[in-house]
Amino acid sequence: MIKKIFFVITFLIFSFIRIHAQSFGFGCLGLVGGYGGYSYQQYQPGMLNDFVNDFNTAATDKLNQFGKADGYRFGLNFFRADFSGFFVTAKGYYQQLGESHSAQNTGRDGPVNYDFDLTLKSWGIGFDVGIPILSVINWKILDGTILINSARFTSTSNSLLGTFVQKFNNEKTEIGYSLGSGFVIDVIKNYISIEGIAAYSYLKIDKMETDDNIKFSEIFSPTDDNPPFIKSGGFNAVIQLNVGFPL
Image (cartoon, rainbow, N blue to C red; front, side, top):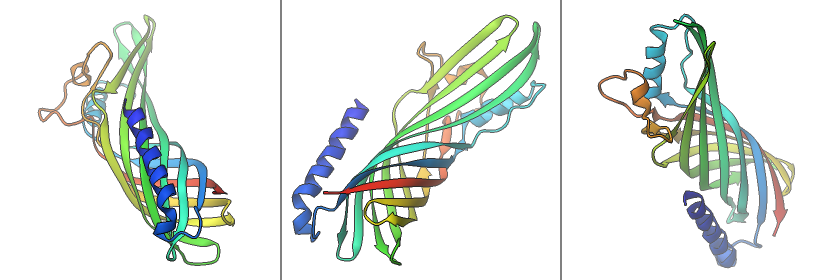
C-alpha cells in the first residue's frame, strides 16, 4: 500500500510540472533521467544499543556497536530544468543500506557463533534547488526529501545443535526526512554528471517484531525506559552518477 501511494505521488508531481512548465518560466520541458550511487548513513541506536550491551555482558567475543550503515541508492529525476537562473529538480529514489556484525559465545553445548544483520530500506520523494557557480559545477543549495523507512534485523546463531534464525521487522512504516546540500559536476552537460550530497537524515524505527508477533524487547532485558529500536538518524553522504535525457 505504501509503495502504491509513493508512486501515485510521484506521478502527480511529474504530471503537474509537465503541464505547468511553460508558465513557471522554463524555456523547455527540461530533462528527465536516472541515477545510481553509494550512500552512507549514520544513526543513533536505541533498543538496538541496549541489546548489544546486554549481549556483551556474557559474550566471550564482544559484539561491535551498530550505528553506521552503507549501501546503494537508485532513483529517477522526474524533471530538471532552469528557472530564472536556478535549476530545480523533482526526484524519487529507493535506497537500501546494511550493517552486519558477528560475535561468539560459549553455551552448555559448546561455542555458538552469532551473526546480526540490519537492513534499512527507504523510499524517498523530494526536490532540490541549485545554481551554477562555474561552467561545469553547480551548487545544490537545498536538497530535501520525504522518506518512507522500514527495517529488518536478522539474528542467526550457529552451534552443534544447528542453525536458528529470527527476523524482526518494524511494526509500522516510519516517516522521516533528509535535508542537505551538495555539488553537481557536469561530465557531458545535460547528459552525464557526478553528484555529491551531504545531508542530515531523520531516521526513527520504533518497535520491532517477528511474523509470529515476538517483540524484539522480549529476547533480552532492555532498559526501563524501553527506547525505540533506532532513536534518530544523523549524517548522510551520497555520491552518484546522473544520466539525463532532454524532454
